Image (cartoon, helix red, strand yellow):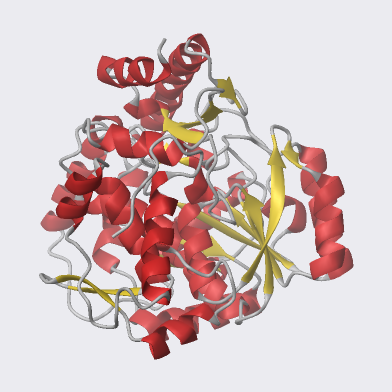
Length: 463
């Protein structure tokens, strides 16, 4: 068929993809032909099954193959392939999908230092249980669909939380969503059309990048720095591409853990005003930040900023309760889109979150969580530095660290090896616009407690 060079600087996954592409283009594999099974190919070539899975996913994304449940992978018809090849470059989301599948389908992976949530025993589980008992005792009417904008008492509570952060809004300017992911998706579908230039943090939020690619957006990177944004590049890219919207994560950003300085926020809003684009502020880690800081929303008062946050990171990911706040006109459009796509969000989970937030121990829980994360940050940062890693930023808060090592050229290859040891890493290419190999890795400090992770890293680095 074709051979692989294990000593080549070209990653094995790219060699597999190119090998099959060449065979298909040259007619060596015709439409309808079945590709070797994942395990068969991995065994024959002495490579990881995860490398083959990724390669096959890439072939599907590029239009060369099709996956048939319980049957395997087959060469796709050439007409279909031609249509896919004509699509704009960079629209495929196979890498982020691979990551999400490994997170949500392979719960058996014992260690998850690359995931994006807190361990169960770090969350407000007791508050959720108390809220659930209180909700059951109310004998609440669970019929109907609930309010389109979400449970009113919770929207009023969000309004009060925004006021604490110096954002003046009414409850009618708040839309409850199924986590921050749905909030970002609603805004993207409302504001973005195929071919539109969309500014995004680079590196940035993996799920958002996938959603924007799916919508056909032209992603324009706003490079992050440890202090926030590289304004020389940002200004040039705004003038060149004239983006319609900027999706950004100023505070404890995923994946870099950097926080933009206040001066950067002012400069960003001046750019948005000058070039007339909407700014979507993702502030999902606000409750994990011990420092009170201005937000883009507080500086702009929701004139051209859409503010997004969530309770999933601190109460529980399972309840899937997030929210967005926006100018009244845009908020009404987003509420209509929410109804079209899913009628309403779950009033039951919104009431559950509301009860947990009213719990007298909620603020004590968030304070304890911030303290616990600060200790984990210090410990994990020290361990990574001792291993020779370079840290992009040292936030001393939040759950993430962004790091690279001079001996790691492609963090994806390291992630495949880790998966074979029951360890889920966060390879850096998932968070980039171009999906190209990178040495960077995202670490979740709350999931870096096990000595097995350090032992694996030492073994791979020869430390």
